[in-house]
Image (cartoon, rainbow, N blue to C red):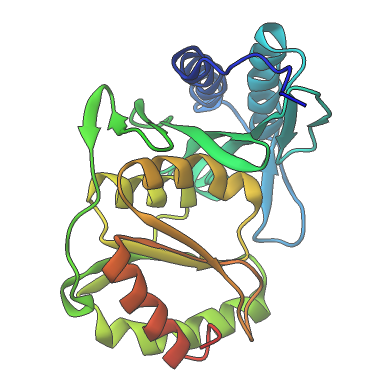
Amino acid sequence: MPSTRAPVDLKALLGLARRAAAAGAAEHRRARRATLDVGTKAGPSDLVTEVDRASEAAIVAAIRDARPDDSIIGEEGTSVAGASGLCWILDPLDGTTNFVHGYPAHAVSVGVELDGKRLLGVVHDAYHDRVFSGIAGATAECDGKPIAVRAETALAHALIGTGFLPDANVRRLQAEVLRHILPQVRDVRRSGCPSLDLCAVASGALDGFYECGLGRWDIAGGAAIAEAAGARVLELDSPILPAPLLVVANTRLADALTSALVDAGAAFG
């Protein structure tokens, strides 16, 4: 039977994603000079603030007002069922620890999936007020200017991003993996904001990125942008680290980085 769903207007959907992300970023700016009520989730390194929750509420309100039949999943607990086939995946404050410490790397990430497949993404760099966006199969941009992944294929010449989970035992394993990776690459960077790391790959500031155990909300928006910019996005299983082991780079460099992670014991061969 033919689908009865209305066709998706990607331009309008991307515009809504940008407006929703901007509403969340406004909550970041509003709270930047305020005294924060800081709590923890899984442990002392896993922070949450009222800004995370206020930002998520603002994003959800913007989406629900325009598209009440869509599903929404948010890091801070939003779970809305819908019948349209579209699902919005939200990280209202990616880089909460950075935000709490005043470190300039935090963002709002909004990803949209259609029937479980990445459709588009917006990442609003709330500190620098930059907006990254991309549509699967189309193009990616930052503040209206096209962006693309770098063509570097040699791991030895690659600047690689990574990150660490708040769990101390996992961090020990990640440090061991990094001990193997670091001598093989030009250098490593760690921003503490995975969505911005994915956008750094998309815009060529990083050649590649890997990290384990990220949530769906950490990945969705930035991965859509990276793919639109020409990156390959892999979600691998690991024998020692929490899944997924995310690897993002151009196709040849993604293969080289994956091989290095296999040799380090972090990914299955």
